[in-house]
Amino acid sequence: MLIQMSPEVEAALGPQMALQARGITEGTCIECSQPLDDGPVNVVLGQSTVGTGGSIWFAHDRCAPSRIIPLNAEATAALIQPEDGLDMTMAAGIVDGTPVLVARMVMTPLTDSGTHGAEPRNLFMQAMLESGFHLVTAELDAPPLAQWVAVFQQRGRDLQLIVLNPAGERFYHGTLPKPPAGWIKAALAEHQVLLLGGDIGGRHDDEPDKLGDALAVAASNGQLAGARVACGRPSDFGLA
Image 1 (cartoon, rainbow, N blue to C red):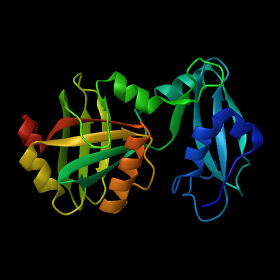
Image 2: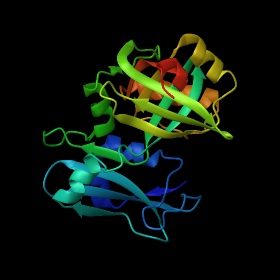
Image 3: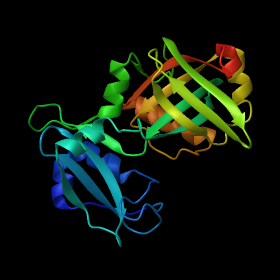
């Protein structure tokens, strides 16, 4: 996938964030809402006019140019706290024998650090750390996080997943596509999963070895947060 960005977008992103934007392998065009394809893809930066918030989007070259879109106060607030919750994908995997859930944002909310010339920070990563998640090291492990739960159940051919924080608020609610063989058995046996999120490359349907590689790269760059959270079927938590 050929990723293109205008000089002003590249300057606003900075070297590190621009490099990450060039590393995407999938996504959705913000103009036509269709999946990105093998054609050229332009980077579009939404930048707040009232604060430091912003987001990276992508568009087919045929749909829109690479540019900076000013975001007013209402758009900035919606970006940081979407009305329907965090817009993310969730993938299941087994890494070093441990069942994992990997959260990736559909968009990349970012902000600057308040210091001139500093690299932008990923708001999703920041929010996870502020919620009690830990910075994950090369060992790809993290301590338990009390009162967070991941509940799954079979619905037809799909596995439905909801992740709740201690206040009962939804962190994720949706489909868990194609869990690898043995994932459900391992999660039920351990009664927990390792929930990971941050600046993670690759695709949500990566093979296990590629998923492990993407997580290792994110961890080595200090861009991965995680925690072990309780996991099971609804009946395991007294739910109908």
